[in-house]
Length: 311
Image 1 (cartoon, rainbow, N blue to C red):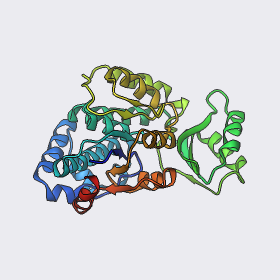
Image 2: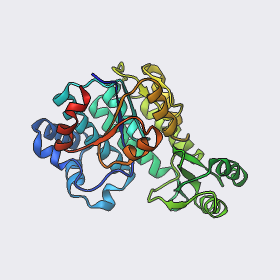
Image 3: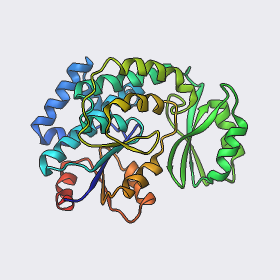
Image 4: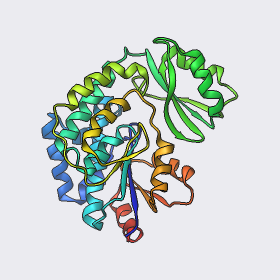
């Protein structure tokens, strides 16, 4: 069996209708959705399948919804193929799905903590005071120094997602973010302001991180069956006692996605599979390590199609 790296998407991959095909095809998937409805106290099933979109895009709804759908896809893959991944990773929120897949969280605990994480992130910064922007085709030799020059106290803008050599997401105070995008013109091909509710993965999330740390301490952690490559340091880790600190730091630190993918390749991953909605990570991975095949898997048909690739 090939050394397979499993990766899980983060916020932004959600869409109304996600998971419906899987739900209709497998009875045990219906049970996961029913358990999620029960533990969260509302029908996250209806939210995933019917929206409305503006409700699904609320951070505190997006996070447990994406975790639920991605994990359901993963369970079908495991049942259908017997695959045991070599390494797992996830982009921001997706790291929680990776930890759930590794056995660290129980299903119910993962839903509760991602819902709470979303609420803390929403509350961390007044509406309109912080945001994020993606720079496509960015020259990082120019980006980094300028951000340091602009930032001071709460007027801060930092690299939040180091997604690939061509893509960086900035995060911070709204006005500082606008100033950075304006002053960096010529150092990137395109800038896209993201539809998010706050300055995620920036120092403005420090208070939320402290509250998250307190929440995480309430949950029982389990031994990890497979190492997770973490966002904060792009390092594989199978020590359950190290996880809470990494999740705490992840809240205000950049997501080292490019480094994480390269580390997985260095460790011997021969095939990447993005498990969950959309193809955001698949597209990034194909640019980062073009010599290693990568597939997005979400529907029953796509799961069927990858069976032959795994063995």
